Length: 215
Image (cartoon, rainbow, N blue to C red; front, side, top):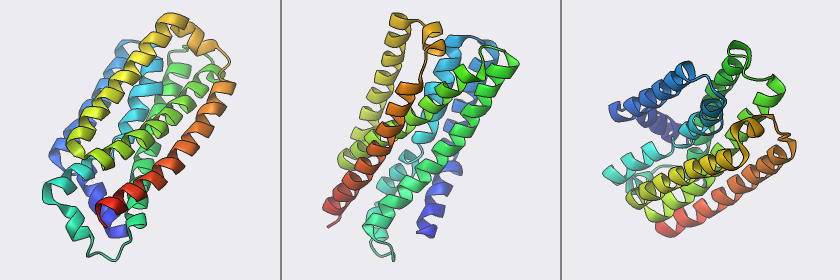
C-alpha cells in the first residue's frame, strides 16, 4: 500500500497541471485574505475554500488512473481492494489535514492580526470547515467511483456550486455577523458526528463499488 500511496502523492503534487491547481487555489485564498479583511471573506476562506481544497486531492490520482487504465495494473499488485480504497482515504485525509493547518493559520491571522473577533468565535468556524471538507469528500468520492472521472467532475462542480449557493443563502438570511457570533457548539457537534458517519458510510460504499467494478 505504501507504493500506491507514494504514486498517488506524486501525482497530486508533482504533475505540472496539479501543481498549478494548488498554486492558484492558495494564491486566491491569500489574495482574498490580505485584500478583504471582512467577516464574509473570513467565513468563505476558513469554512469553505481552504478546507474543500484538501478534500479534492483524491481526484488527481483518479484522473491519472483512468488515463492509463491503471486499475488493470493495480490488480497485479499485492494489495487488496479494501486496502486500495483505504489508501485513497488516507491520502485525502492527509491533504485535508494540511489544508486544515492552512485554514487554522488564516483563522489566527483574522483573530489576532485583523482582530476580527475573539478566538472563541473564530475557532468553531475553523472546526466546521474541517467537518464540511470531510462530508464533501465522503459524498463526492462515492460519485467519482461510481460514475467515473468525467461524470464525477460534473457532479463535483455542481456540489461546489451548491455549497457556494448554500453559503450565500445562509449569509443573506442570517447575516455574516450572526453566523460569526452565534453559539455554534450544537451545530459543530452535529457536524462532527455527521462527518464521522459519512466517512464510514463512504468507505464501505466505496469498497462495494470498487469490488463490483473490478470483480
